[in-house]
Length: 142
Image (cartoon, rainbow, N blue to C red; front, side, top):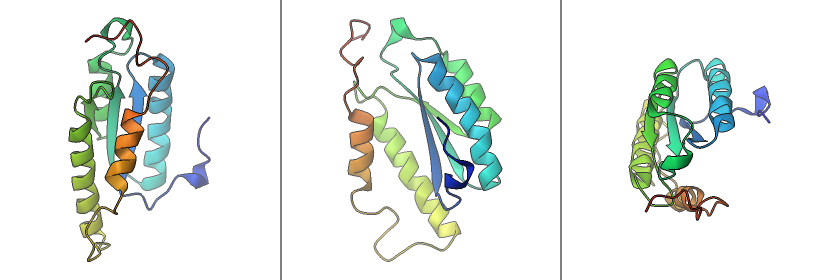
């Protein structure tokens, strides 16, 4: 289930690690993946740890404090979102774009066309808003 060590890019501007607050296995996976990323990049790249499905309050198994502790352990930025409700999704996209711009300026990879390639926001929006089998569950809080 883990990416091969040599497939983890050292050319990444940022790392985005997403887990579900309703799935302890996804949180455990994030906790196992982060040290691998840090070993590979030498703590150079920014890390965003995103807790998704914030709207599924009744099904929550990972508390906010655990997510914040994970972010703190890996010098990451932490945010909770609900793709279903589009809650804080745009905040993540803005924070990612800012960090990508900072990273590219630091590494002198800024092109005349700007920091973020055309279509990047659309791809990220589709990722966060894609339908999940649980998104219309009775556990959703509306």
